[in-house]
Image (tube, rainbow, N blue to C red; front, top):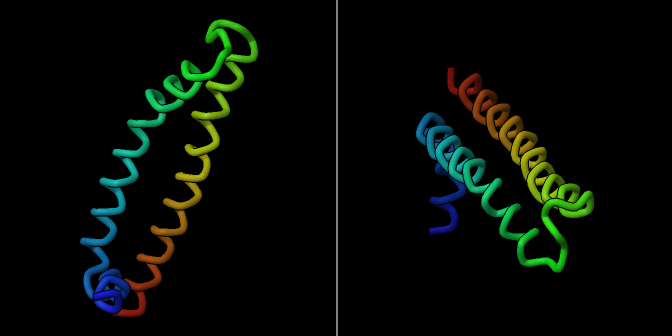
Length: 85
């Protein structure tokens, strides 16, 4: 089972890329509500400078990590496609 999952990107890179893109967009859409919920759970006023900074941090940090992960996945799939051709 584990070997089959690890070889999935090599067997069908386009399907893997499509699934990764769908997952990426789903996570991206959940960033704003998640960051607002995190700030709301803290004992900080959302309209204060600290509340705004925390909300920006909780929103922007995962977004940057997602962009870097997306670049790596696209590069990996591009490398696989070039090796197949």
